[in-house]
Image (tube, rainbow, N blue to C red; front, side):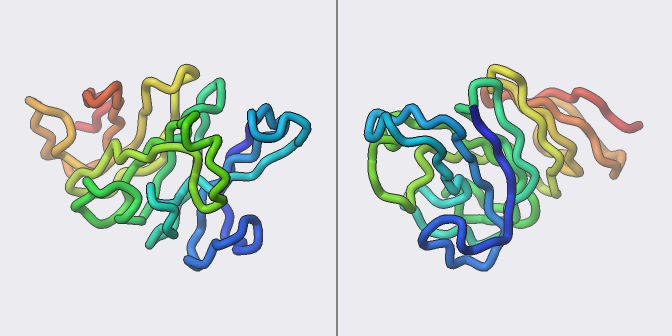
Length: 171
């Protein structure tokens, strides 16, 4: 029913003026309460809550089984107001039914939250079928509470509802 991808094209949706790679979700069969007869809908996900362009590129989206959540990496620092670091962070877009009905084409139809904004780059996310867990590679050593990571190598971290766990660690 859904396909996610990243693209540098600026002509896929109106108002894409940031000259950065963006994340898109294409709904093959649209079941929107606004227009039940339509098929196919393309939504740009990598925008701020106010519908503004991101200030950096976003890449490598992965989608949950029902299409309601998408994890991706991004260089943008304005997708979530809680981001205080630069570099590559991992974000989670969650569909919002309330915003889905709004006809503003600049809105993403969901909420974006940063799930990995550590002290170094995070990248290569994957998401569980139900969208509650995201695993990613990171050089950050400040994500997992109570653990010391001084290996200066990338590690695999699992995020689950705001908690971080090492899923694979280089020694």
